[in-house]
Amino acid sequence: MSTPLPSSDFRSLPARPNLEFEKKRAKKLVKERGGVIGLAEAQLQIAREYGFSSWRKLASYYNTWQMHDRAGAELTPQARIDLERSVKQLLEEFSARHVMDPQPLDAMGTGAALSAYIPRFYGLSDTEIFASTLSEAEAQLVVARRSRFPDWKAANDFAEALPDIGNRVQLPNSATMVAAKKAVLERNHDELERVLTYARINVQDYLNTSLLGAVIPKMTVPEVEALLELGADPKWTPRNGFTVLEHAIIRYGNGDAVDVIAKRVTAKKSFWVAAGLGDVKTMLQFISKQGVPTEAARQDRPDAGILGTGGTVRPDASDLEVVWEAFMMAALNGRLNTMQALFDRGFPVNYTPVWYNALHVSVSYRLVAVVAFLLEHGADPDFRAWPDQQSPRDLSRMQQQHLSTDVLAQQVHALILNNGKN
Figure 1 (spheres, rainbow, N blue to C red):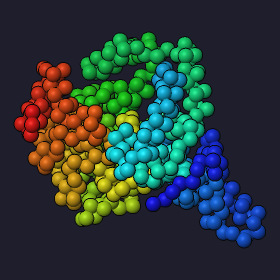
Figure 2: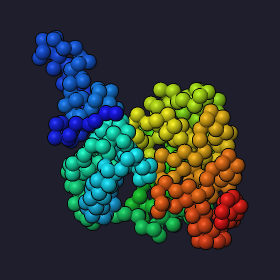
Figure 3: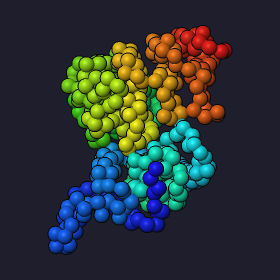
Figure 4: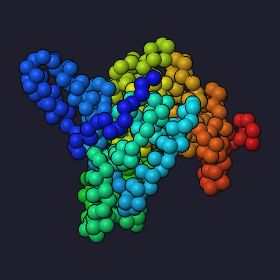
């Protein structure tokens, strides 16, 4: 087991990490040493200055940061309060878990965030991370990076400016969004343009953003077709670098709606995209018969922090976690054939690296066929990551009560009710 050195032994990361700058630093170091050290040794020395155990990890961290920077930062008007509270909660959780052996399930994704955003913890396991200590500055960096800021100062500066931003920018209200959605469903471009122009919203931007599932959650086939008819572009790529199809796979929660997009574009060949599309033949190119994902499967993973579902992609994740990501895409989109193929390669139905698993998500999205399939394969409706977390049965009961007229919610609850204890 690796034992990370104290945070005081390392220099702080640059405010805006730049891999090209570090490469030039490494070449300059080789030159200054008169060729006594090679480029690889110089790169390793620079990586270790920041706390990374290898140049590969530094490069991976920097590349992730650049992707997050392109996507843009996210904070709410209550950001200032949320930032301070989040740092306190993170330090408290770290202190509590520091004395736990073995380490509990990373239900809230804290271990993954520490592994992704603190150089000396980069790629380490929870056991290794929580055996060490955590400084307040490091906790602040994690909180900032979770909202896609380079550091704590940038997050605070943005939070302090939010009231002024709110005064200067006319944000769309709920009435505008309701009227716009109504115009979309009626496929009335003139009315949509009137509503959005009045709210000072660009029509094309609205259509394209809506196609990502950012405006209308849990998209339906008619909604997607209406957006396309009104001019939404399924081939555009937003600044976060992920395609419309990739957003659809992770956001729509509706494989039929995703297929409307898939028919109009060329899908990128990756493990999780193939799983989300139900393309078993392509998906199996990324996993061995023993259930081990290839290196290519590891190189292109769904970044939930960018794609809008929250969470952190854990660097150097276990084989099971990489496969779980693809399995979740299959479940979200109702791809039973893909799920079966992963079961055939040994994927455990109840695997849960965070507080929720495939059954939790399928119940929440009211995916009746997927819930039935998972239960048939032994999914546990009473699983809880932590004693106070909700089980799939809890979610089902809550939906049955609050969505009493929703046929799908009632069907899901019937399936759960007939499986195990009441």
